Length: 169
Image (cartoon, rainbow, N blue to C red; front, side, top):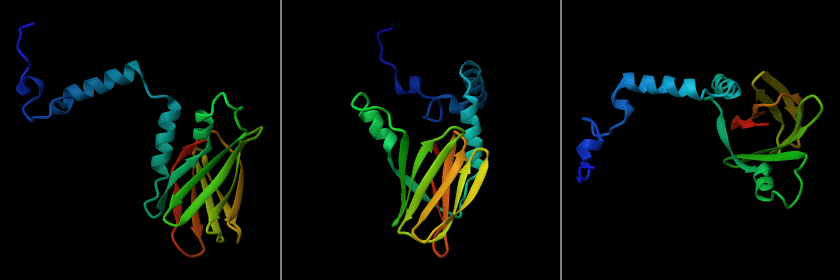
């Protein structure tokens, strides 16, 4: 040790920010090294590509406001794992809720829209999508969904189209 504290000039580059962003060659080299040592899992890459492909700038985004798996994590050891997962998403005054259950060959969702209104739901997943009717009570159901990311896009007969955040089932 030299006995002297490093100055600000010792810690940052000419732009004042410091780091690999000042040297594109260094940044690229670090990115390649990180990918070689710890590559992203294929399912993460596939999910990212699917989410990008399904982006929908014309829909309002409903935020995830409840996930029962969070409750199970908090209560681990108190009771056994549940057979289903409840999810709720909100945008303004609209709520999209559904229950996910696992079956022998895939997943099933049963849901409803609040306030209830007829329309269409598109359940989007990495392998495609499924179009469903929403009845006058706001109910819908879909079966045989693959494991992985899903998003529900609700289009009422009149009003704003709402798409949920992507969640992994």
